[in-house]
Image (tube, rainbow, N blue to C red; front, side, top):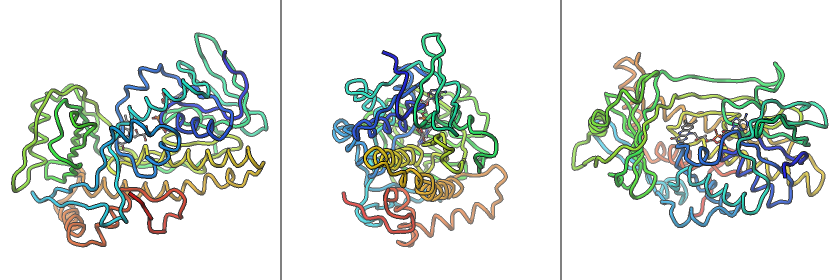
Length: 405
Ligand SMILES: Cc1cc2nc3c(=O)[nH]c(=O)nc-3n(C[C@H](O)[C@H](O)[C@H](O)COP(=O)(O)OP(=O)(O)OC[C@H]3O[C@@H](n4cnc5c(N)ncnc54)[C@H](O)[C@@H]3O)c2cc1C
């Protein structure tokens, strides 16, 4: 049966919307998720893959931890490569015992969809939201198209988890939100390859030819990225050219070999930083990529989305249990502090590791000096490690993270 009324209308069934719905369901808050795409499309969309400890914890609490615990790869560090040298960032030593888990966003989404279809709340695929009305009133509603028909979902609150291009943020009247953004003069060419990773931990490489990243999705699937000019057509890069370029950018003194294998997917990802403030307009809330975007160099996008909805779900639960709007009123400020910290870190990682096409040799030397400082100073390395593994959800961002393994 198609629901006509709910407490929280969640627009978008990506990681933010699915996790929010699951957390609300567990706390007894009624909600409905409207997702414009079909299930198969949502489950196959290749995106992020690094989960902070806090994200793993909240997925476990949501009941989506079983396969994650079985198949996720726990990583205790990353490797930085620059100047043909290699330096390891040791997370447990530098960031109070913390680690991250490699588990693809596709798998997070599959686990959450399985749970939701089995236990609720309602999740409608092929339901494209076209407008949000009445967010300034006590009776908002969401208009959407499904099965070729126009439908309306009446609700008490609307949460836009509909990504950067979604309609919920755009439905806020002019002047209701302030946005801050920056575009970068380069993109990532990302590939998936059916070959075991050539490294045990991720490699972030600064090279005179541009940035490269070696990541992975499983013990048999590698995920690799190359910095490319904006406007690059992925199809213009042959498999051989991609592997040759990766080889050149990961070059290091000492033993190292990049294993090659069949490339199963190629795509180009533009790099953008974007924040909208506040994350609320009346009874309309924004979470995840609908509210903020980071370049993926810091592996923060999915983790920020999970953090937003964890805070928001607790706020709706408090309202449901006690009638208090205190946490809901604090939602935007609570999340924005963490968002801006992650924005800064993602910007720092991006601009330190990539080569701007207009960059002077002087600026390249500054990048090397910064990387050298991280390699040589436990204090500088700890700053990177603490940000990479993620700051705790609850403590103010200025406080040092306390992690358990
Ligand atoms: C192409 C791409 C590649 C990325 N790669 C990486 C990466 O390699 N590493 C990394 O760390 N991060 C990466 N990210 C970032 C990370 O994947 C995102 O931060 C994360 O997906 C945010 O989750 P979300 O649920 O907020 O948004 P999304 O995942 O974008 O989900 C939004 C959902 O809303 C749905 N929707 C949109 N409009 C409507 C509508 N009108 N009605 C109903 N539903 C709607 C969409 O179909 C989608 O399912 C990538 C992001 C993108 C876009």
